[in-house]
Structure formats: structure tokens, C-alpha cells
Length: 161
Image (cartoon, rainbow, N blue to C red; front, side, top):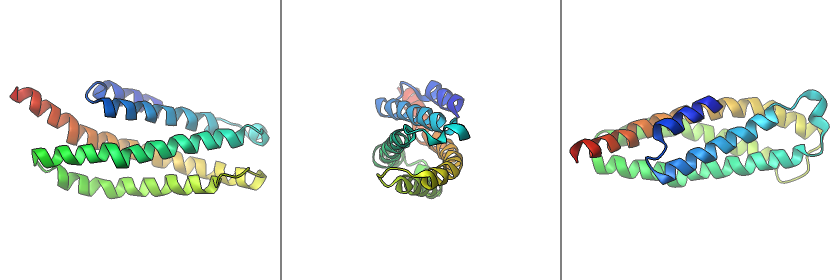
């Protein structure tokens, strides 16, 4: 997952400050996810886990929000300006991204701002794998949109200059 993030930054880094910042946020999200997912059974009683899950959820919500309220808006604006089928493409991809958003929000809701007891922790660890799979899907879909709705337009601008 981390390698895919690095490859995306290489392909699209520098194209837009907004996308650059968002890809850095993605990398932070992956770091927090990997930190928690690497906790073994014996360490699952560690008192710091509550804070680590809280941090993961904060970064997760910031990332998801930036996607929906900043990045996707920019991509749609570009698609409208170029009128090259991007709106139709986005209409097909966004519902799939929305499903991953629901999983992320549901995961966050399980934390519910409180202290985690042993059962709550067990449940969160069970859901962590599902969250990871959905994040991977989300990243692939987002990269697809960036490539087809942003990078392509940047290339068109450069070729017409």
C-alpha cells in the first residue's frame, strides 16, 4: 500500500499543490494504519492503543473529507471545462468511492470518542482489515480519477501551449 502511494506521488506530485498535500495526507493515513495493523495479539492490551486509534480516525476523516470537498470538486470542475467525457467517467467511479467512504465512517463511529474496552478493541481490530481493503480500493479509484481527469487535462494544456 505504501509503495502504491509513493508511485502516485511520483506520477502526480507537483501537478497541483492541492493534490500534493492530499497525497501527503494519504501517506500519513497509511503510516497510521500500518502502525496499528502491525500490533500483535500480546500488545493489544496496551493503553496507548486508544490514542493510536483516535489518531488514525482523525487522519482518516481529514483525508476522506479533503477528497470529497476539495479534490473531487476540482476534478469535476476540470472535467466540465474540458467537456471530454470526464463527467460521465466520474459519475461511474464516484459511487464506488462513496462505498469506501461509508466503511471509513462506520469504522470511525465504532471508536465513538470513548475509551476502548477489551471487546471494543477486538471489534476494531476485526474491522481494521476491512478498512485496509477498502482504503486500497479507494486509493486505486482516486488514482484512476486523477490520471483520467487531471493529468490528461494537464497534458492537453501543455500540448496546446
